[in-house]
Amino acid sequence: MKRKLMDQNMGSEIRCAIEELSVMVKVKGAILVPAAEHGGGDHAHEAAHIPTRPFLSLCSLLLQVLDKIGPTMAVLSQDIHQNIRRLETKHESDPSTYSNMVEMLKNEATEGIARNVTSCSRAFVWLTRSLDFTVALLQNLVRDPGQNMQQAVEESYNITLKPWHRWISSAASKVALMLVPDNETFISSLMAKDENYDNLKLEIENLVSLLVPYLEEIHSILRFYHLDRLKSN
Image: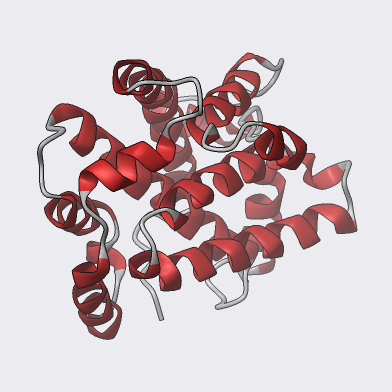
């Protein structure tokens, strides 16, 4: 998953994520069709497609972005890694069938196991929410570069993850916020060797402009499969 590219150009996670996402939205059949919300019914919804490998590659790249925040993100990062691995394992079990993430959701819904603790559906829900968190954080930092990093992380968490976490998870996250780096350190860590802040800002804005509408489509899929209100255990 882009490891060679990442090794050659450290600090370019944002660039790689843009590349990965561009492939996802341009590949034939990669555009999501939330037909259930557009009056298309179940059969039209069959056209929905989330390419599994590119999606997981994107999650891996953005995981590296979160890792730069340090120990604060340790629990979230571990969960993301485990969820990526769970979906990778499912994909590897039948690459042709599960090249489309929606097939995993569809099969688990049919079997009645979508809400199980170890389901692929649950893993996909939390990966999506982690992407929501990453987008919110990047938007916060671009909108107000002088914003306190701890505040940016907390605001992003409150909007995207806190509503779905039980009390213990929320309490742990509150304590972890005390360990975040300052925003200058974090932003510097995102820059490639040949990059300045203005270029990074443009790249982040580009990434967000691609990722936000894609995530909106993914959330429509989650609503269709009644997974959008799923809470942590």
